[in-house]
Structure formats: structure tokens, C-alpha cells
Image 1 (cartoon, rainbow, N blue to C red):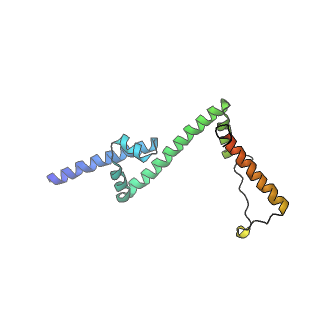
Image 2: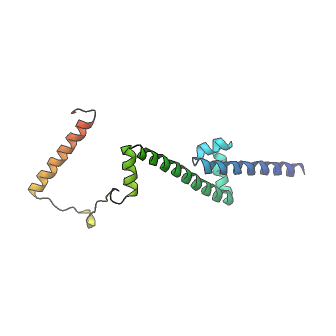
Amino acid sequence: MKNENYKNTIDVRQQKEKEALIKSLSEMPIIEIACKRAGVGRASYYRWLKEDSEFLKKADNALQEGRELINDMSESQIVQMIKEKKMPAIALWLKNNSSRYGNKLMQRRPGGIMPELNREQEKIFRKAIAMSSFIIKKNNYGKKN
């Protein structure tokens, strides 16, 4: 009977730890930090994921909820920076939220074969590469290397 009471006590404590960890993950979706905040070791967290399918579902949902919270906070900060006319924030927003400014994917020809360049095209291409290299070197620390 004494062993049974002891096991029940452990189960109750472990359930409280799991609940605290789930709450922590929903607020901070970084496992290391969430475990520290909840007072639970990482090894216990990963063991519980393997042993308890219900905990696995709750942990996955909490991580997703936490990521959405951080995303909302981040977007709020980006919008604030846009209002302050911070160009990196403006560029980031446009790159990720406008088809006109997003990354353009280069089209590859089937089989990865690029067309051959004639002499004039090759000359222009080499000059452009040399110029871009010069510009990059010049812009690093404001001087030519």
C-alpha cells in the first residue's frame, strides 16, 4: 500500500510538471528555456514525448501556439520599425509580403543546361562579374582590397 501511495504522489507531481512545461512552451517555444522555466530537465521532456502520446500532442500544440505568439510580436515590431522609416524593415516586409518585391526564382532549363554565349555575350558577362567583384571589395570597409 505504501508503494502505491508513493507512485501516486510521483504521478501527480509529474502531471503538474508536464502541465507547467506545456504552459511554458506556449509562451516560449524554445525547449531549453521552457524546460528551465518549468523546472523540468530536457531529458524528462524528451522521455515524456516518447512515452506519453497525449503529452506529445499537447507539446506540439503548445510549441505551435508559442511560435504564433512570437511571430505576432515580431510582426508588430517590424510594423513599428516601418512606421519609423527603417529601410531594412521595409525591405524585409516587402520581400516577404509582396509578389512584386519577393525573391525571384531563376528558371533553369531542363537538364540544367545553360545556353552557350557568343564571344560578345561572354565578354560582357566577364566584365559584369569583374565589376561586381570590384564593387563588393570597394564596399567592404570603403576601400579597394
